[in-house]
Image (cartoon, rainbow, N blue to C red; front, side, top):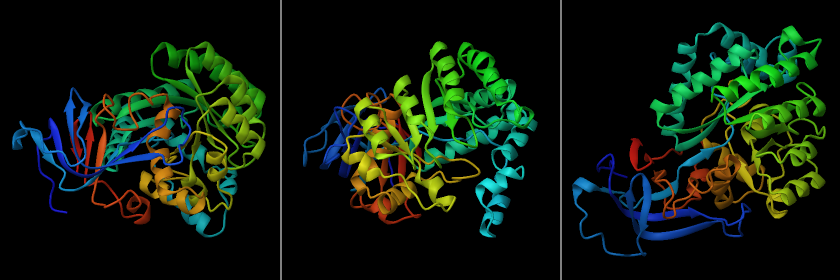
Length: 419
């Protein structure tokens, strides 16, 4: 493809080869989840899609170079919605990767002081300004890779002040990056070392101090908690969810990543906004989430990078009527990737999704998980003009050319940000 040219904020986008439109009226994946329109043009007004032309329609009569972006036959998809990320960290943990290459497990590294606790020490030592700079850089990279809406968690501070510092860094970084950001308080990520023998006391800090302050200061949209043997049990998670609900925050749950401890039933009881990971979820619990209409955020990047054998059964989830989202789980320890096209590849090869289903899950599915399905995740009229241009003839090419696909251009609210 030749270099794409046109105004940074066009009124029209013409020359579209294929426009991919994810759709659903219920949050469940339709049998054919992507509507394809060929050889159309878009009109943009006030950052939203104002009009989609008929197929093979003539260009708008008032289209001129100063107000028109020529897509030159590109495939256009919605911008990705990444519904689960952990960007508020300082150092990468490539040294742990080397250890795992030599045979150590993720759990062994964590027990020796690595893992989340390694990131915790670095975040505690960093200033808010340093953390903001790092998060902003990562947000810009997400945008370059086609993500236009993102959920961003804290979780590496594990004190009241350091978790609030992380959330402030996320909030400050989002504005200049151009991304729509949904900040989530994950103070209940793991038990910090000063509470290792009294985890219930730490849960009390999270519930009684951390969550109320984050809500009062307007720093978080949601609260999350990790239910796992290495983190928190169901009753501890219940305390966190109860505090989040009392504070008026949305509720999310990490659960069933390595074991199944009853987190799904807790999620249904509290009608959480999303349940994330679910690699070890049972068939019975899949049906419970389908019946409750709770989106499942799937994170195959973590399974791949930790060299685990068991991926979530996305095929069974879809066939059972679940709403699913695909996300990077971007973090320094278990999924250090910002590429949703790569995650789509893993979902197709390891979780038995079709490319169309994977694209739906990485766009409209993510929007459902964040409660923004009326605003982002697709490109029908009145939706935000968040979209990616791809040098690809069909959507299949995005996961097919694994590790190599990135958008030729990215638009956020009608403004061109990246090429």
